[in-house]
Length: 323
Image (cartoon, rainbow, N blue to C red; front, side, top):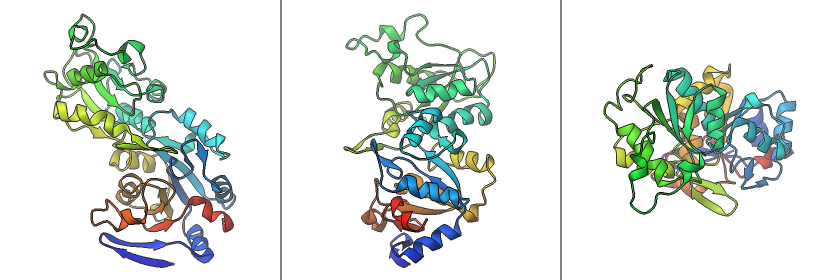
């Protein structure tokens, strides 16, 4: 196993069959990012399905941990299975699901308060699953543009719902000025930073975001991600949101609270230093960067690298010969 020292730390490069076999012996629990690890765009990465099946045959436990908030766990499970990978719904942990749980069980959003959504159907489906009422999101009216600088629709009766007690933002390919403007009004209204109370109209309003990924990897390259969708709202409102997804604490806390994984026997596998690898480090588990997605060796060697992985592997499929 080759050790490489970089400005921010030391990582091990897994190259030989012995190195890879030792890795599989050391860990019992594998947390996998999806985009850039299991697939790239719509194409499954070579050897990945076989590796995961062999891990299961060895008795390893698997959790798919993704910042993808565009799809519900149900749809993510379908995507995983389409890649030829065996999985169950309780093995899928997305930032959309984690955000819904966070609003319900940690922030304890009152049952009579609603969530205004900047996001897609997957986010709405996870809110429905935990019984949280919502508006915005995929509603065709909310996605419609304003006409020029005519702000009258934002002041019309009923345009702003005083029962909204939280704004939740994720990636949104139908994002509109109307959505941003309404979300802005909710999180900047008088008393918006106060406690969100049951039976109240207006007042406190949480500002929650699924994840801070500013880019989203596809087979055609990178495109703006969820972080790009809500950054302007943060800057305009001067409110810092609660960010749930990787690498932030709410998601890692929820994972370990809902499982009996032993951290010393758990490893996080991902393709991004600033989300997957930093997420694992903050959670107190070892990490492995695969070079089939966003970050490469030069990124680890940068003086300002956000994190340094425990291990580096060319691609998850390269474990197929030893798994």
